[in-house]
Length: 205
Image (tube, rainbow, N blue to C red):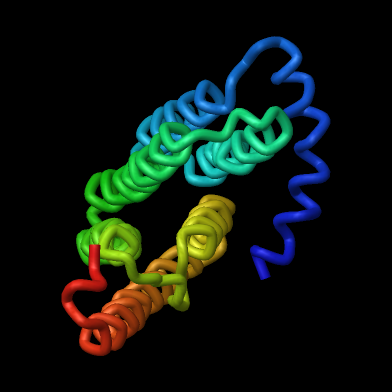
């Protein structure tokens, strides 16, 4: 569903990307600013219990994850370094969001949910690592129930609605996200295993 929405979001962001490019702002700068803003907002608002406001600010900066790609395609300035930087800073942004939630749960004495949020953080990193490592070995790994966009949407929507006072929505969202992330890890491990056992060793990079 999120992949189907991407073209529409791209059309919305294109004028902004064109305006930034005319001012000499590179996609890498947009990537860095988006990540810094995401982490700063998550670590400032979430531990204070300001979940709804924090989610709004974080969502604004998360859009930079789409805007930098729009700008790179528009200006033809995409590069290996840009792709590497984008993927790396995605992990930093995710860590900031879920760390902010962990801090909030600890401060509010919700230790079980702190553990669930921490699991979501670790599982999300493992999901991304499996794909990167598989591709580094010459295999593909594009399967999975909960990829990064899905994890972000579930996490942010749950936090935002929880900040509005809807009961149990944040807890339910995080438990579902933890389950989906664990399933995704299993799906990707199985996918890579099937490719690895069917490929002669010399075909792997």
